[in-house]
Length: 259
Length: 187
Image: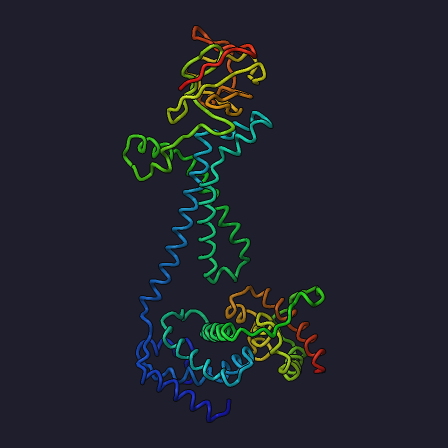
């Protein structure tokens, strides 16, 4: 580019600016962009934390980790009860947050992978703290009272019935088998056989909360293993006092289905 | 006016002295023209691209943070303009890194020695004709470092990659460039 061209270009650009009426983009547009970026980052981080908290809370109330105490046969039930959906939604918001974060200067001035790891740690710690804070239980109670209907899809279900395992309260003992009611008031007939693994000296009474692994056979659930989960304080019980007890039935005992 | 820094000049332009933008154009037209020419290897197009760069920069002046370096900001606009042009023209004449041997690397220091300056000048002359065949991600840092005399930090701000990666790209770019030059018989 020679000296003449330089002068020419300078003049041409200034002429274009004048003739075409080119003006500055408003500073408010840039401000809005900045705020939008910051707001988007904050919102996606908060949502990632909330959904991770929901995943932890779901695991806490369903006590899905307890399935692992059955050993190998409990793994499938655990995997089935694992709240993948909340984890995946939380991860999706984390991805959105990282994409927004990559637009900030710090993303290339500092090691980006380390920054992302720190962000993930922050989400994990905040999600855990929220899950342990008891706020979910308070919200769940309000949702149950119908006060925050918008949160019902998140807190309205305690579930309890899966393909490989279930949790519920014993509502009836029939011929040595159990009838259990899930958190959603569904009744299930649990068939106990000689092969069902039970805690030593275990017996069950109406009102006990139990966790069962096994598989479905039509409408009945054939228990492979079973344990008490009353308030999470004890997994096994000694002999009961005065209440009706379930005993392990003979292998060929008749089964009554609950309709 | 000539004593004013770029950032001070921008402040004045933003506060209504639009005519001062001519000074910005004066200061950067040569540098950006060279950069765009090397980046796109289309001297005929480089001037049009340069005009677009200055118009875009003018329109976005309020988006510039005066606490930062203006030159990095305007080079970034030029970089984006150049890349968009390359995408549009979909240049395929690129050499793949995978075809080359894997080379060990330790990033060099930012401080340029006299020897380094000499090497820079030598490289400038020799490689101009080979640059076109170099993949854009290696060509850009090489052009900015050897032809525009930008530091690693400035290149990092322009390309928005870590300074260490700039070093890696320059190192690898030189090795690939050497291969290209050898193939073309340029010593």
